[in-house]
Amino acid sequence: MITVAVELSRALVANRGQDEFVLLCSRERPSSLADLDCEAVLAPYRHELVLKSRWLPTVEPLLECDAILYPYWPSPPFRRPGAPPAAIFVHDLAFWNGWVDKLGAAANMTIDKLATLQKSDGSWVGEKRWMEDNPVLVTAYTVLALQEAAKDLSEFPPKQN
Image (cartoon, rainbow, N blue to C red; front, side, top):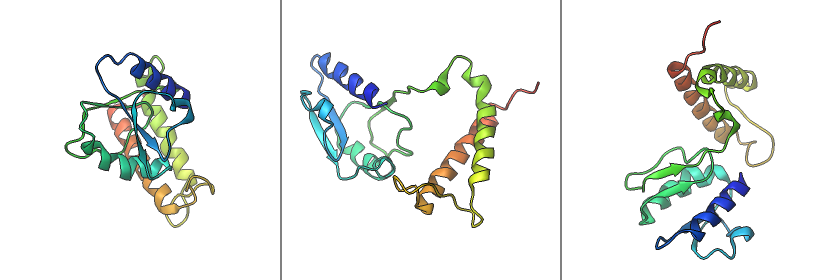
């Protein structure tokens, strides 16, 4: 995914015409984009969860830009009023031909798998990396995933054989 984001950023800046681009970076500008002729706004955070839930929703409305491109998935979980329109570039094997027919089944599998991972106190927790050992954060993200899976299930029920 990093390669896609880097190459997409390079191509956009190289073909920008009169447009200006600003990179939103986590703590430092990537070395692979060091020579790119554009401004970079550095976040005080590196962790994806904090970037997407705290920093991006705060900084988006302040950018004074026409649009924002998120070259990764998922995009921030919420956006504030005044944020520029967003385009999200999705590069994921989940979006193969015929994905709609399989979405309900995938939602069922997600819900079933998450149920097996739930702790006896109702929380979820992961490994000790990227703050996945924090049950509050992991449970919050798991509940969001379950809500999305439930929505997918209601919109795209699995086909009965």
